Image (cartoon, rainbow, N blue to C red; front, top):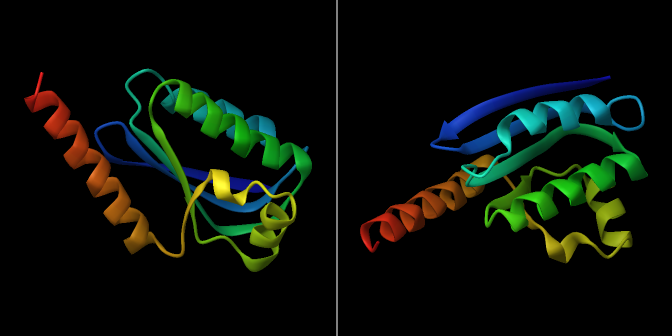
Length: 126
């Protein structure tokens, strides 16, 4: 079972709170939820992983595909609050360096604020 809560932080910046297992039984629900928020206007998506206690290979694939999809649109992706066992899996697969990882939400909030400031500057300079 995976509980998914999407919170719009600011203009087109979304926090996705996940709780439970991200696996073969739950990944489609996450993909469906993400398809509703990821589009050409999206600036950033942050996964709050504090409630994720298990992730399978298909769950990891969803995380990687989300990052790639956002990258193609010049949007940002990050994760925060990884449980030790989840972080270890990403470490072992040697894919952790490709992600922005934050220890807690205040740190992620600073990241979000920086993205918004950069977007405002881009808009001013056009």
